[in-house]
Length: 455
Image 1 (cartoon, rainbow, N blue to C red):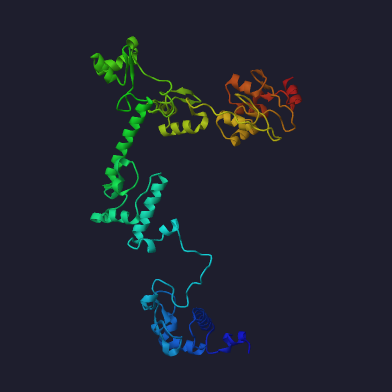
Image 2 (image 1 turned 30 degrees about the horizontal axis):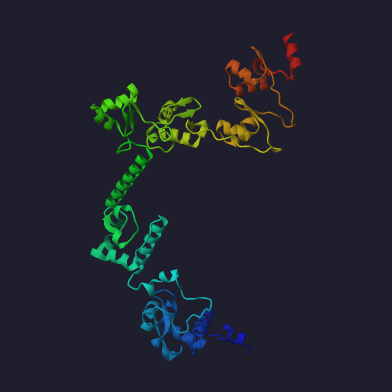
């Protein structure tokens, strides 16, 4: 009898096919684990038939399984008992908890070496046994954030945990209002035991803003962008010298602050603000960010985006977005026009004629008019709004077609539309359909009938 026939379920007629398959899986699992197996298919099936255990067998926590007494010995009738998977997991001997059970030891891998150097520091269980999993994850997260911000990190995991375990700070740690955070003194220096303190989210944010404002003012004064202790102060030039602010000049001359400001603003007898062209008025200057930016639109120039929004009857955010993204020929005046992209000559590139001139391609015409290339091709193909291709399909230069109207002859439909105050599309439609005496000059269809009717 072959081995294949020996394990054929048809050789065991009293055992269902599904039960025989589960029996083989259980038997192979015991063989892999190195456990002796003494069940036959019939005895294994009879054991599961007791108290209808088969219906409740499975892998869930509350499902039934076959377990060995003391988790030792072979799988035999007198050495197994029925229990749930959860209870079987709890019944495993304590010395096997946390490591593979007998029969499941991993094979030694000669290529795998124990962690050394930097990798050994991240082995929490062996190097930091007093640190919990949650504390270790939070410690690594803050350390990684400090590294990305370019801040030096000098805290160990134990020092970090001692800081948060003091006064039960760990329970109040968080990112929302009222929670505790770890701050640095003056928001400068590394994260070290001597340079950190515990504070709330609101107080830390206020301290950071105050420190950054102080550093920004000091830098601005050093660069000469401001003259006093606030962003709005400007240096004043007088006949007796330069003063850091109008208030300092007023105190020197014994006049009011308002009087000194007016003298500098009006240029009275040598008084003026020190508008250094090398600093003031440049993009990114602190003072220039409060000045309105002029906007260029198809209707003309406006002093600001808000004025353009009022003129167009749109929202201010829409107007500023159009100017920033250069949509529909909107742009800020202080931003130069982008240079025209050089388009390599291609066989498919065709010159386009528009009301504003001739362009070598539809891409250049679209960039000039602030529209997409698809819209430019659409206008030129359908000859709308005065757009057309310079050449026809045969490669010949397309000459404008003269239009005959009741009010006279015009060299082109565009000129007729301009003189008669009609849309170009209307003029072309009338000339094409010969509406009330309108026609193209080169259109001879029905001309003989027209002359006979006139006689």
